[in-house]
Length: 336
Image 1 (cartoon, rainbow, N blue to C red):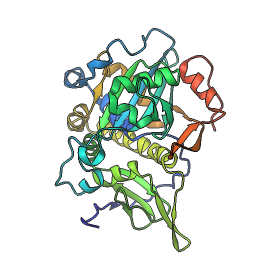
Image 2: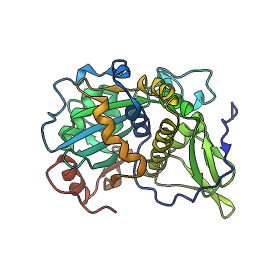
Image 3: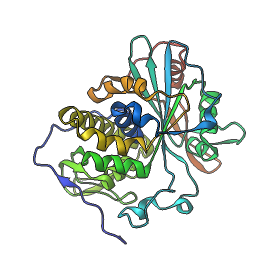
Image 4: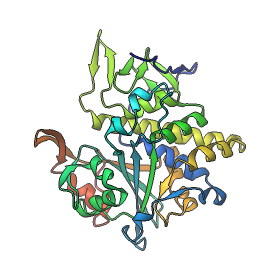
């Protein structure tokens, strides 16, 4: 490699192996951290996406839907950063795209949260821009992404929250790393993930991002490197592990030592772009259950296809039940 890989820090205490990988997204950990500890003083510093005014659905029904977006914009990437080759700049990336998209559905009466990740390779109609992968909708603007999900999937969205790569690393650094367990030696040559031996590690800001972004995830078992062929779907599952670990650590730190709160607030608040009407303190109440697993997690049924020479994902036969639940037109479907 042209530059040394960031290292992971081995932890002495080995926690039970994480076997259940469901769904999730990298930015949820970040937004939850920021919102759970935010105060009125910090709320004024959050960036507001004014173009979403009048586009989002009215929040007067029995549920609230949050669109959570992890942006892969390289505008703030540091060329001196050890992982710059894996992130690059705007020219390398060909503009900004949504690296991760998730919808959090909250029952306003019960306060129960449900989460669904939307694969970045989902083939979808983008109003005014033809048909393309979901992650390309964001390159036309946050308003186009919102209109795509509301119009093409039929899911009303009440609020919008976004975080980027640089902000992600800042928050992980403020946390002192995030603890993740690995059953096998693990790597991703594209993102720079490098875990040499099994066990539990505290991933630094670089390896945390490499883990959360990994789509070419490999584990070494039976004497050979085995590639996870699920690509984005596998990444979605792994991001849930990171989500749970990051939020739990943030809440533990701030509960044990309130003085840590200001450091995390400074790292988190500057990372957020939200819609004009979002109330951070109100949203924090909905995100707190994530730290203890108090959330229903749903996967969207998709099928791989090749369209116009592109390897994409299309909605599967069982996708309708989950979409209807998040749209508020049906009850929760079975999980699994």
